[in-house]
Amino acid sequence: MNPEIAERLNNQISLEFNTAFLFLSLSVQLKDYGMRGAGGWMRSRYHDTCEHTLHILDYLELCRIPVAMPTISPVEYSWDSPPDLFRLAREHASLISDAIHHLISLCRREADHATEQFLMPRIRSQVLLESRLSDILRDLLRCGRDASALLYFDHTLR
Image 1 (cartoon, rainbow, N blue to C red):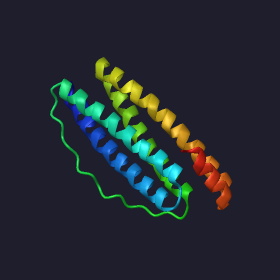
Image 2: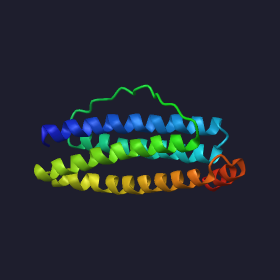
Image 3: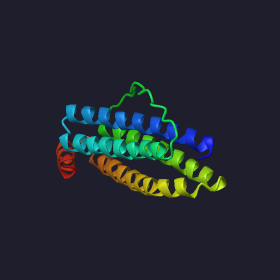
């Protein structure tokens, strides 16, 4: 494997674990706000992101590439309403997608077809996640600050 691809995959592990930790933090914030359905949904994204990240780690080990274990960065953000939290989640999902797209482009330039094919399912799941986050954000914005609408919406995410 090209050393630059190996380095980028290690960077991807760091980016994804940090994003997973953000999703977990957002889950706690949503539950504290009283949105247990949205908090549970976000916690599921934490688990999904960890699972995808472990696949990358396993792939590096399979290729006998040293894995650089990341340090999890502190999560710092502020929010005024649930849409703020979902915007932040969508931004981080987009960062992951962009990094994977760049990795796939590098794999194509370097003719690393195995790694390119390995990454394709991950990008598909990212497209679905970003789409779902956009849908949730649109629906939350429609709810505004109407408590009954927010409670109903939260119930739909359970």
